[in-house]
Length: 325
Image (cartoon, rainbow, N blue to C red):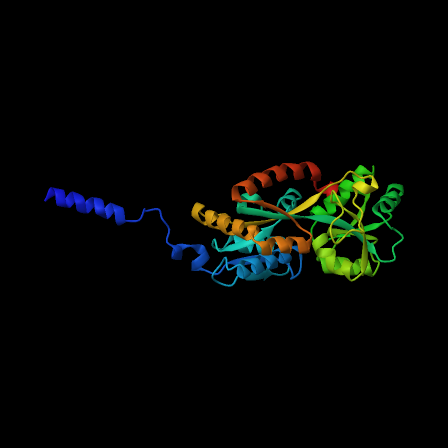
């Protein structure tokens, strides 16, 4: 009898799944639709990233339900971030250096410690745009004028003080021995407002990203006179780098993904697996090329370390709110 009972016990161990094993239906990827929360209006930088993610995830059938994009209009980027922070693990949001710089400038209460970094996806580049008939044909001429009189030109950017667009231009000016404190920076609420002001010649130049300026550039509604890349970009071969113009500036703008702080390790692993699969697809790589972005995938652990390093970098770059404003 004892021998029979022992045999039954051993057999039961063989057929009982490990206690920690998760069933597929328990996965957040199967339980609920995935939602990407976007701060601001459609077609901005965050929205374009969300649209690419949605397209690839659905096209490659990496998820079994449609991916939702939820827009949080009005206010600052904090509106979308805080909305996501109060949700479950099937909600994510996009981030960039703004998550770090806004807090350093006192413009936001949200820090990287309030969220769960999930990935760094890609990086893109800054450009300087001017009206089509501007007297400036390159960035060197623009800086030459600013050097003579730093407050003589209006330089626009959007949507927040201390973003990479503003910082990259300030760095180029510093390298040309121009005091960035004296530059007349004008902030706009959206890229659309910024480019309209430029086209209407209400500002002399705009500092922005390739993603946001591409449409107006291709329509020849403005011209580009400098880029922060190391070499000229495909599709933008007529745009000189700052390096070509004697300014040793190479400056990229990264885009990442984050979730609510309360995510558990299993949920983080699920997102790691999904986002890694997404970034390895041919569809994702084609979208990056189309947008002029550079792949820079990092998983959740790598993203957290990267953002900690970036935080120290931005603390040095910003050096207080007055330097930027």
